[in-house]
Image 1 (cartoon, rainbow over the protein chains, first blue to last red):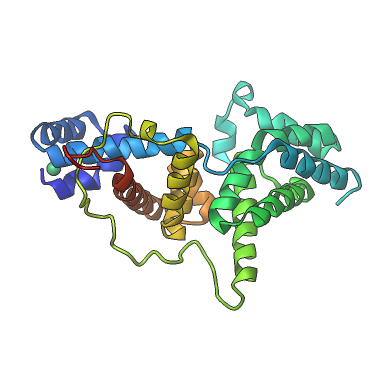
Image 2: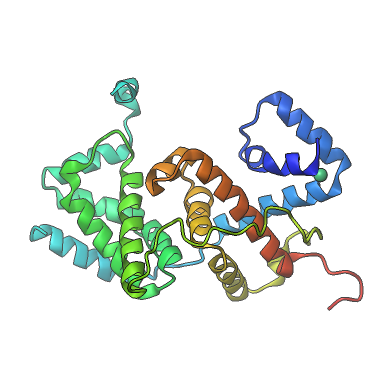
Length: 78
Length: 207
Ligand SMILES: [Zn+2]
């Protein structure tokens, strides 16, 4: 397996949606290729960081104002 | 309609009951849905429009539109995916208004090969985010994702941040499954590449 072939399957590997046989081939490539190993671990970390840190927070005061506006209009038939 | 019949009575998504009550005029049931999903809708709208005021307006408009159209909601997709679809459309409409005359779609700006082949292959520090304050980190993450092409950014947000499936993301954006997959891969690789600038291990003697 080449690095390009590995990268093409990177998402499936991260999302754990590969058949066992393909998975084993990827693992084998990983054990001998530092580049792909780093790519895999740092891509995983990228996803994890974006998942665990809210980039755009909606403050409670604004939430409340939006809710009130939405519900008021729903009640009056929008 | 085979898919609907396969879903047993007991496996019904909790939103279905709320939607049904809201349809029958129970505004409180709808409020529960607003409470449940407003932050996510805000996040999606902000990622697309890159504008705080617009994103707030979109939260309001998307929920009102959903309320108006509740009767048209078909139980064959999740309420949330349906809502996201409304929010994405509202967001793109806003963008179009801002850039008058220029068509805006999720197909914009994707003619790039950047990121398909990883270049910066330095490893990262073990917990790279700990080298930054919360505020600094938030700024880094914002700046980095803002630099992605629109069509990649939204796929990454729906799929990886919001946790929609590939199929749901495709349905929501009106894209094919292969298109979602190829964008997701490139989005992930580009983000990784850009974050490397901040997170890579420093060599001895480097500041
Ligand atoms: Zn490799």
